[in-house]
Length: 593
Image (cartoon, rainbow, N blue to C red; front, side, top):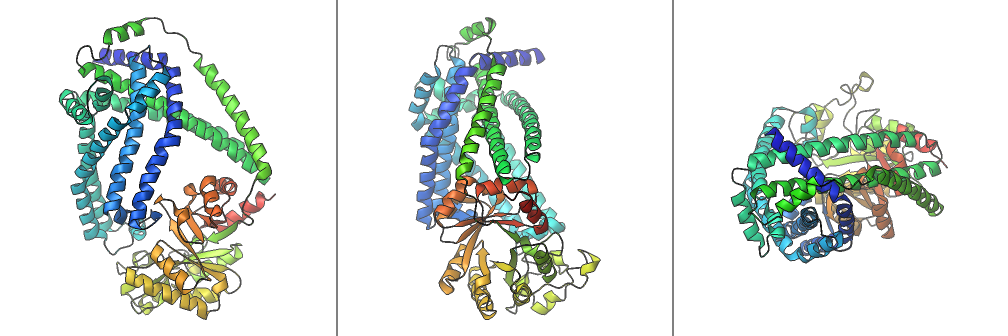
């Protein structure tokens, strides 16, 4: 067994090494094709489906509603088919390159693109199978969610972790594990569909799937072991290379000094080198994966389908030496120099946001209990420009400042905020558990926070509706409260409910509104808002430039690591949202021009 495994590994290594240059050239050409044609095609299909749904972008909790609708399901299948076809086209070209020494990378590229219709069909059928297979498991997970978690705040459940959290999580995890095992078996049965489609003339997608299922009988364990070995090897290689690169690059960033010019320059060089490393690892992973699949396919393919004798003969001949180490080292030097020069030149036209403001997340959750008057006062001391607070309606229609939709984290049990009165909520002590100096701190109303803010700090009020009808009432009440306090010019509104924001625009056009984006499909910069609050990893230079071109500012959350400030400055964000405004203010002052 071990001798056979070692023999197969040598065969794979020999094929990959011999065809490495052609394979790398093909992969780079294919990435260009993907960028120019396949990615825009997938984006166009998604935008069409979103327009049929009535929005330019869908995010957060609306994603499930969208993908369960006819336009969303169509988007899932069509876009998924294009993305799977993109992967399969690259694998198809690499398969042909590794199977035939006489094939030039350009010939493999041209022949792969001609296979596009058949490969899309294969991707569609496979994706449809996985979606259909997932339906009963998703129904079970939804039932577990409804039974154990319905009406409870997910954030509070994760932090407090009561028994119902573990019951719901356990059932969902068990269902997910079973689905993954069944899906893995299906994947292994269809493993040879791509090589069959590519290397056996006259085969269509359905025939390829059927033949793969037939030939995989009795070989699933061997295929799973080979793929697991490949996955472990690639993971170890990626971890070692990226860790070493990360250590070196962090060393560079740490010594970039306090000048914003040097910080931005170092950041761009670092990000450029990381991009090169990730893409190189991706190319090597694809080439080696194709080598594994081709080796497995040879063992189940009919005689004569793949010229096994000639392939074995090629492997036995002395391998032509490729000075790969020197080639990569030279390439790295060239890329580093190019990144440095381009970044240096681009700094001349560097456009940072005129003022980078700091927002205390939940009024500041590091130095005081979140969403309290004490936290707001501390945020003022720490130099925050804004405080973000969460507002909900209680059972007696009071505007209370709380993040979670239930009282679990505040010692009030599983009762929802909208089923408790203001008096019941304010009877809770939310300060003692944070620190003895905050003993007796209560959950404030919106009026309390508006009064405490005064003219010392501005408020970004997040609307947290519990339903559509509740959202309408909440929006009206919040705007009326802000108007009554005379603070329309010192407040803005944000929410994950796009409908609530559009109502706010109608009721009070003077108020800026912002959509909160944790994850999204489509283009959030096309939404009718004044600003977008996005997870920090989404706040790229390209995204920010696209938003600013449409008059939309980008705020990044939740940024608590000073090392993130440089990249976000370079991206051009307008506002940095953090639990620790004092630390972020200190970092901003340290990199002042």
